[in-house]
Amino acid sequence: MKFYEQKIKGVWLLEPEPFKDDRGALSRQYCMREFKEHNIETRICQTNLSQNFHKHTLRGFHYQIKPYGEHKTLFCLNGAIYDVVVDLRPESATFLDWISIELSSTNQLGLHLPAGCANAF
Image (cartoon, rainbow, N blue to C red):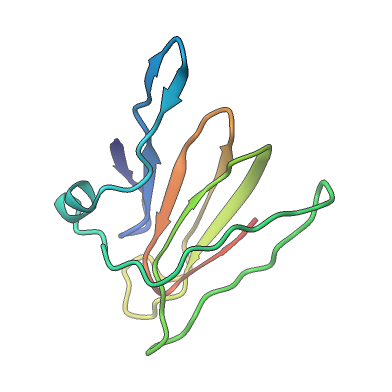
């Protein structure tokens, strides 16, 4: 997996490196060792699958405040999402900065957000 840190500290674009053969492909979406090498939180408390039943559905900005902050790693399994991330950590050098990226089943990119960053898609 390739890791590209974004302009917001702690936000990483993840690019899987699929293994392909005549049966199909296998991509790693999480590896504790690789996440640790990039100082990314490795404790997984929960996993979720979000589905939108209609095109152009907006899932508004959401995040948890301290002490309930959560880091998140996002992938799009089907179709595409336009994800916007905003840094809401007052102590951060990138406070209120934002980035956007398209995640899709075609590009297979992932996005990791640290606690204190909100995202909408």
